[in-house]
Length: 159
Image: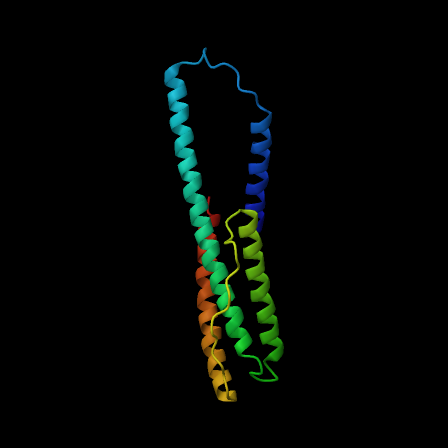
């Protein structure tokens, strides 16, 4: 996905450079019907591009919001058990890294909100049993969320 987005950004910047360098000469010799058809195609392509950007922005916003939520839930599981602590730490780092990458991509696309979201109230697990039960629930929901994220990203990556 990163490669595809990078290619899209490079392609866009190359086109922008060509656009800036191409002088527009007189169009008197072009048939009016051709010019009108070109204008219609430009409007259609602009509308398709705007729709794609809106869908991409929506997907990235949902991904970032979900990952941000799971960052807080995983932090609430701290102290779940000594055996699971390294796995939980790795999972927290991976989720944080993924959320950061999504945010940076949104910034690069100019689609990031002005302010990053703030973490709402997270559950407090007061006993070992609550942490283990919460861990099962959080892991299960995170797994479902990531499956949906994967399907959404695959959909966006389809030609």
